[in-house]
Length: 231
Image (cartoon, rainbow, N blue to C red):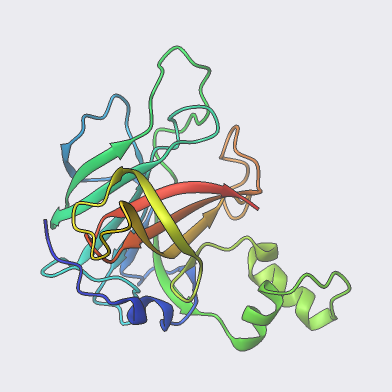
């Protein structure tokens, strides 16, 4: 396993960014995972959401000797979405340590083989954009309504910045806990992807727009945990 070189401060002090489609972007959204898997077997394919190019100074996480950090999620696993935990063990190589159950005879929860592929960049959110994303005010100004459209009505894909601390991550004990009183991984979220109808339309099948696919990293062992939350 490669070593996570990012600190908690690197993640929580990073600039909040939205994922922006760009012909010259070095990050890649969607498409085939293009990964070598080890660890637990995959009874069905997982989906690739984003490969973070860590040479971008706005990337919140970095691993020693790794340029691209893949963010994958088991969209087709179990009713309501699954969970996955994995370690980055090399460039384009991951080791799966936890995976939700897959039942082939269940009705399909997600039907696309892959998500639409796009090149992407990370664009820092302005103060005004962060303000309206954190506000529940309904009677917004004309300018703020324009900003919200730019942010997909608040459902933009987000990376970096202070998101959420998770005191318990994963279903298995942390392999390298620094706190012996804590068995499971804990860590900060660093990426959120709502099941938004923008910009691809309603591609999420059984997932409603209040579902967010979340990624967090354990700073003790470097394991990435992906799960969903309802807003």
